[in-house]
Length: 248
Length: 333
Ligand SMILES: Nc1ncnc2c1ncn2[C@@H]1O[C@H](COP(=O)(O)OP(=O)(O)O)[C@@H](O)[C@H]1O
Ligand SMILES: [Mg+2]
Image (cartoon, rainbow over all chains, first blue to last red; front, side, top):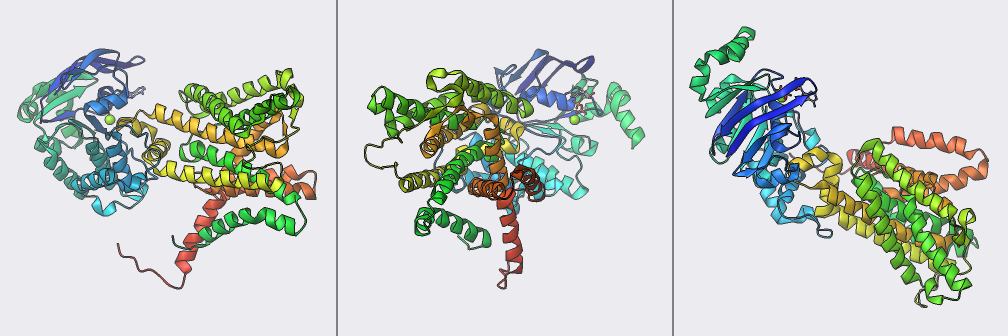
């Protein structure tokens, strides 16, 4: 589904992505783990095109998408959620998702018809809200929702663009235990329906959900393997998992 | 539609604007027809600016340039009609058509360049373009240069409407304002409008969900400029005089102030703002010649204390009203 080859990105002297290569299989939940500052968010930005890579190639669903602008990558079927909540705060929850549906319903040079009465936008939007459990919040101004609900809305918006692959940047960051569980349920629901690249700090979640894991340290991929193999990998334990258990 | 203080206020305002010439004639004060005519024309300008500024978040600091383009279409046409006997150049329909074409072209060029930037750069580029056209008009001696052109006749609408009469010009302005409001209403609620508002709210997110934002913003920019160009045609007929100062940046600034004062991103906000602005100007300048000393701080206060402008205050009044109204709707979540 996704093949990243020798990807580089530096911010001045800092190498945020350092000769990174890995592959994501279709239908997998592929987790990216690594300490803060490892370059995980940067990698997502490079995949969506928001951050321009210095070199390397990104093959998505058979197409080389390196150098393709952001909105076209979305049209190819790549969708992301953001680590920091990134929604339309002053529109309603429903409008937020309807806009995402609209983005993939052909061009938007419709100047006359009332968009909030168009069934082909509103109905699918409501269904996506249902998948993430937000249908009761449809009429609320999105900015007023709780943090956990914002994250759910992010997922609904990403789903509404009808993607082949979801890039989720710490979807559970800052959530309480109950909200996190709800999010895990959502991801389980989505598993196998589409391919997911999941960045997550909570190791329990990662080892529960992921089919494969790539470990990133200082921009370098030090291992890509199954959860069991990653757990036993001495290099990973030394570089990341070991450090994590010290802090725990 | 539910009646509320805000709705009642807006209905009274619009009905009031509809009967100004009748009242002015009745009281023998035709001056008021002219004064309110100006309000209508600047309302159209503010309504068009609100499309990109209020709904689209594009702070164009050169919107008066389109007033200038529309005005000069009338000024130049009328000059050739009167001095060279080329009568068709005074035709109002033709002048409006030309104002649309040239405003759209100007909007296309200015937008295509300025929309590649954001924030202060965007403001500065729109400002720079409008000042450039201002100086072009100042330097163009053939069409009056700095002094401008006096119109010896108003535009000719093939005898369909005779706007040489101030009252009929007033109603032409009024109809144009209603049309611009209706057009705005349709636009902002359409898919196109949702996109423009989404891009104001969160542009990065718009790209991430797959919108090519630039081309839509550019179209919005062109539409806004075109509507304002038509207001320019009306404005020249109103004042029977065209000069470069309509395009001056201070005039663009006034359009922004009217829009902000009335309420950004609401349909009627710009009309309320334009009327309030010109009222205050008239009233304060009648009291003291230092009126700007009072006007400035008043505007600052409104902007600071009434986020959302006057229309924002009315929305607040509505909320207060519905909380304290005797019949409570028991709404269950
Ligand atoms: N726009 C930027 N400019 C400069 N440095 C950046 C920028 N974005 C990220 N970085 C740096 O790149 C490194 C990787 O950041 P990031 O991808 O956010 O890590 P992670 O998401 O794994 O915590 C960090 O050291 C960060 O400070
Ligand atoms: Mg990060």
